[in-house]
Amino acid sequence: MKKTMLETVDLVKYFDTKNGIVHAVDHVNLSIPEGETLGVVGESGCGKSTLGRCILNLIPATSGQILFDGKNILERGGKSKDFRQKMQIIFQDPYSSLDPRQTVFNLIAEPLKTNRMGTKAEMREKVEAIMDTVGLAPRLATAYPHELDGGRRQRIGVARALVMDPKFVVCDEPVSALDVSIQAQILNLMMDVQEERGITYMFITHDLSVVKHISHAIAVMYLGEVVELAPKEELFAHPRHPYTKALLSAVPIPDPARRTMERQLIKGEVTSPVDPAPGCRFAPRCPYATPECLSPSLGMTEVGPNHQIRCCHPLD
Amino acid sequence: MQTKAKTKKQKNHGAAYDIWRSLRSNKVAVVSMVIIGIFVLISILADVLFDYETQVIAQDIMNDLQSPSKEHWFGTDSLGRDYFARMLYATRITLIISFSSVFIATALSIVIGGISAYFGGIVDTIIMRILDVFLAVPSTLLIICIVVALGNETVYIILALVVYLLPSLVRTVRSELMINMENEYVEAARSVGAGPFRIMLIHLLPNSFGAIMVRCTMSFALCILSTACIGYLGIGVRAPAPEWGRMLSEAQEYMRLHPYLITIPGFFIMIASTAFNLLGDALQDAMDPRLRGYRKMKKKVFARRKK
Image 1: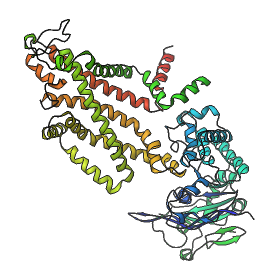
Image 2: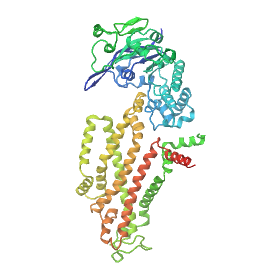
Image 3: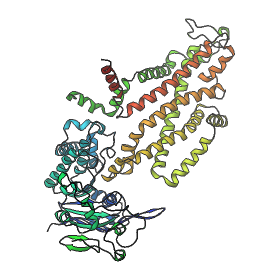
Image 4: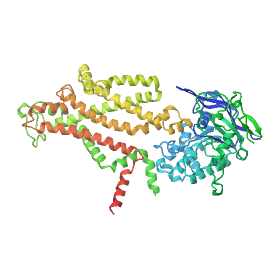
């Protein structure tokens, strides 16, 4: 049994708005074993990015605990620098997440500089080593980000995250802004690094084929809640939650022979995350919904080894 | 591709070198810089070439209103003072006033605008409403009021100009910082543990620098014009010290017979303010690394098309 690197306990993030309370992250319980990758999938606006930012304390959580290596990081309040060295994030957009006025060297060295890690020579050595790891040529050290293509920019993003030698990295859709061919390069790079250094990833994405490639376990989110949590193979083979099933059937299959295959599509729009009704949030769109779906006591139930869902009508 | 030597050179010079290189390739910028350089040189040399007491303010009524000659390059004014010497000294006074006002106003606006943008909320509202009061008063009237109330010492003229420049500069700084704060790289910096000072100094200010610099150089032009304006109205730099605006108004009487007396200061005012405005524009292009080399690229494309 591997030790748990990161665990969230009833993590909640509500945003107070004029129209009511937005339940962006609602009682999320996740745990990620060391050296593994948890994929978090869901459609736009389901709170997956907010979850990632809450875990890094970039947005203060409303309530709940985040246990990093067994310690609750929210307890320490503002004194966040020491765990921040061990927890990093790779951003979605390699265009806006890099300061256009910094050279590649400065961008990668910034985490070291802000945390005063070592002398100038040591920093230079570390930056050069990490540039080599992520496959950036040394001559690019003096370049500015606008001179580089998306793939190289995202390599800078990866290098920034890795230069501190983190234990845990939140990847917030790191490849969704890239070409498919470059997506594969970056994903493989991240997997190689994981193998080498035993880093734990939380991989946020809406792209199921990406998540299939990189994850060990997958959490499916819908309107701020985790609706299904299972190991990768199990989830793809036997989705038990109607929403997961619909998501999986929406993945394009590159096979003309199966073109006519029936797809199970979800009808209707995502209901509002503002003051949601009690019970299953997917119920208004769910083909299997019954009145008992709206009972407020609905929680995660175990349906198999490491397989949990939040549903009263699990599929077979 | 870049040679190794070139890479090294860039490393040594850093971002300032890149800006300089880009400015150098812009003809308008070079001409503006040369003109501003000449003005600066004049202000420095004025003291060396002429003695203030005997040649600039000492009257010599016998030799009044002489036409330009070998002894008096720009002729003499109605009190027989050498117009060339007075022009040089006037340049010096105007530049000193403008530079001090712009420098103080910019420094203050970065502090005030930074506080306003970073804290936001009630602090921001209070600062902006106070500045709105100053913006509500017509600018020339505001300068005149301050100078008349406090006296036309150079220090008070500078103070008046700072008060005049401050609202627009603070607004520029504040809005630029606020726009840049929305960028994801600020969050990226925060995620690696950067504090507010680092984010402000390393990320926000350099990214807002272009717009602030442009405002600065434009403010320079505004200062030159405002100084001349109050000088012309007779409440500017105290006589007998020479000043462009005052010289304009004094020369007005003799405009028909001695048109050069009014043309020369007018020409200086125009050239100086235009040069600063154009330099500001060129600086903006040079500061933005994304625009760097754009002109060269355009040239190359055109050359290729001609072929």
